Length: 148
Image 1 (cartoon, helix red, strand yellow):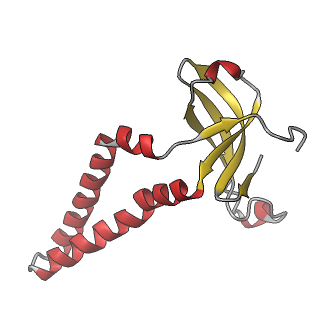
Image 2: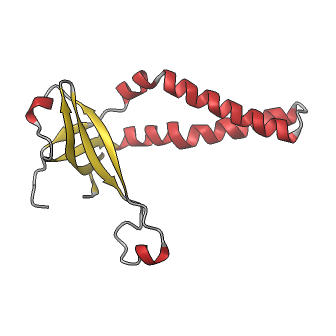
Image 3: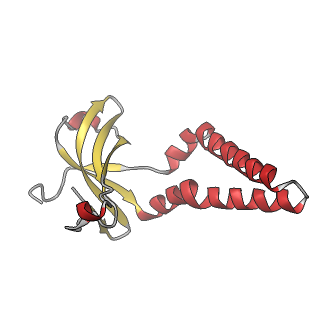
């Protein structure tokens, strides 16, 4: 299973793990950059892992468990997801740390305070997960070339 680009879209191959009324759970293998390297076992950098993605679709009834499918996402949505998970938290921690140190809070307390701000950020992400999931959408389709 692999990932590829089609214009401004990212396509992951996967297998239907479950089908329910409003969507489909698809199991995909996320590979690290070294995922295809023959030496990955020797250096201990084998970072492939299986993930399950839920794709909400009105056509869920058309898919069957075990069927090979493709999960498609616009590249811009992938970048937005990466910003929510990686980029913004770095700025939250660094910004909180800078402000706390600047106002004279001791270093240890500033570090703990910055981590508290990070916890608050992730709690807010959790509270607004439905809104975020409405913006970051996946599509599902039958592979155009199922032999590949």
